[in-house]
Image: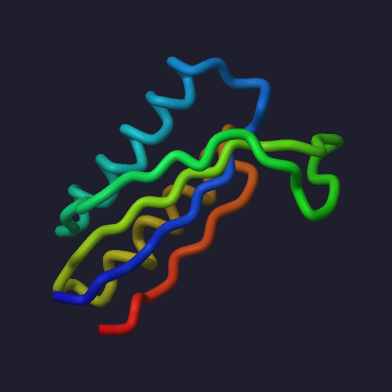
Length: 96
């Protein structure tokens, strides 16, 4: 199993329930494409390095997952790309 970490940056305009729904949707995409979520870390509201869509702060989430399907990270990213609530995202492979 290969391990990945997905960083998701969400808009501050979302309330707690909406943020939870977005993260559940992302976890659903991971499961749909043969991945297994191992951990979800919420880092809270942090200042952005630069202004994005007239926002200076955003909520950061880090989702660790495992998969044997090499195409899983690409499929998850392609679906996250279409989500309006997600400002930025990045999926990286973790070293063994």
